[in-house]
Amino acid sequence: MPADGIVKSGGPPTPRDGFLRRTLVTASTRLLDLPTRYGFHFLIAARLPIAEVGAFYIVFSVMTLASGFGRFGVDRSVTREVAAALGRDRPHSARNVIWHGFRSMLLFSGIITALLMLASRPIAIYILHKPALAWPLALGAITILPQNVANAAAGALAGLGRVATSQMIYQWLWPGLFCVAALSLPLTLNVTLLLIVACLAVDAVVGVALMLRVLPGVHPEAVTMEQPSLFKLGVQLFSLELLQLAITAAPPFVLGIVAATTEVGRYALAWRIVLMLNLLVSAMGAIAAPQFARASAKGDSAALRRVASQSVAFCSGLSIFPAILLAINPAFFLSRFGAAYAPAAPVLRVLLLGQIFLILSTAVPELLGMTGHAKTLLKINGASLLVLLAGLSVLPSRFASLGAAAATALTMIVSALAVSYAARRDLGIVPIQLALYDFRRTLRDALRPATASEIPSESVVQDNDNS
Image (cartoon, rainbow, N blue to C red; front, side):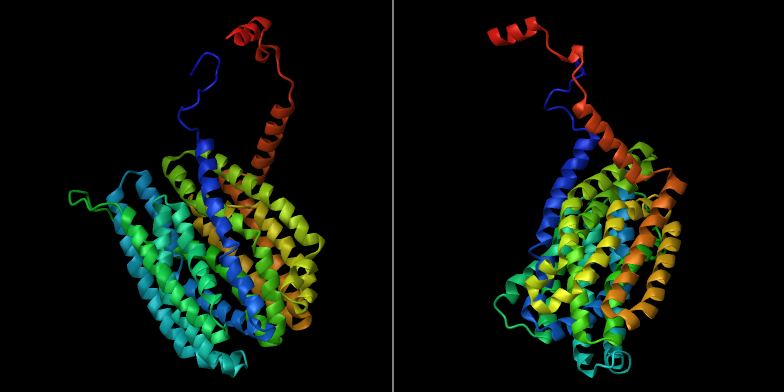
C-alpha cells in the first residue's frame, strides 16, 4: 500500500466492492420484476373480472404450494452444496450434486403432478365448494413439472455463482413471456393457466441451456466423493420455503372456502402490492446465500458479519420510502385497478406491517440455513407455520380478508423476530445492529471535520497549481 494509505485506482477490489457490485447487478435484474412478475399479477387484476381474479388466485395458491412440495427444498440444498464444493475447489463434486438434484426433483415433481391432477375435482367440489374450479385446478397441476425443472436449473446456477442468471430463471423470465403474449390474447381463467404452462416450459428450456454452458467439466481422474443428502438438507431448508409458500398460498385458499371470490381478489391484489417491497428481500437473500455457504466452509466469520450487515442495510435503505408511500394512502394504489379494490386499504396496511419486519431481518434465514443451523431454522419455521394456521383457522371466518391479513402479518413478525434471536444466540450476529453501527460510523466519518494531516499544505497546493 502506498505511504499515504490510499489505494490507487485499478487496485484489487475490496470485499465490500465485490458485494456492492453483485448487489447492484442482481438488484437491477430484480427491478425487471416490476414490469414482468408483478406486471403479470397486475395484468391479471386489470384484465379479468374481480370474481375470476379471485378464482385464479385460489388455483394459483394451490399450484404454488404443490410446486413447493415437488421441490422439497432440493434446489436450495443444491445451491448450498455446489457453492460449498466450489469453495473447497471440488468442481467435479459440484457437477455430481447438480445432476443428483435434477433426478430428485423430477421424481418428486412427477408424483405431485399426478396426485394433484387426480385430486383436482374432489378439492373443487368437497373442499372449496366451487365445482367450476375442477378443470382450472387440473391445468394448474400441469405447471408443476416445467416450473421445477426451471427451479432445478436456477438453484444450480446460483451455486455456480451466476446469481443474476439464476434470478432470471427463478423470477422474471416466464412472467415476462406471459405479459408479452397476454397483450395480444383475450384472457379468461383457463386461457391464463394454459399460457402459464407454455411460458414455464420455455423458462425450463432456457434455464437448462444456460446451466449447461457453465456446468463444471468432467474430470475422470477426480476422486469420487460421497454424495451429500440433498433431501435431508432440502427438507430443512424447505421449511423456510414452505413458510413463504404458506404465507402466500394459504390465505387465498382459506378465503376461497369461507368467503366469496371477490374477497379473495381484493386480498390477492393487496398482497401483491405489498410484495413489491419483497423484491429486494428475496434478491439480497439470493445474493447472500452462496456467500454465507462459502464463508462458513472457510470459517470466515468476518465475511459472515459483513455480508449480513450489508444485506440488511441495502434492503432497508431502499425500502423506506416506498413503504411510507404505501402506508399513507393505500386506497390510491388499489383503486388504480378498479374501484372494487379500494376497500382492501386496511388489508394492505396490516400486511405492510408484517413485511417491514421481514425487511429488517433480510437474509437472516439464509444466514442460519447456510451456516449449519438448518435444524434451528426448521423449528422456527415450523412454529411460524403453526401461528399462521392457527390465525387462519379463526380470523378469516370472522373478519374475511382483514382477518387473513392479520394472520399473515403476525406470522411474518414472529418469524422475523425468531430468526434474528437465533442468529444472535448461535452465531453472535445481529445484522440490523451491525447495519446501524456501520451507518452511524459512515455518517460520523462523513460529518467529521478534516484533520490537519488531511488538509493539503499551502506549498503542495501551489505546486499543484503550477503543474
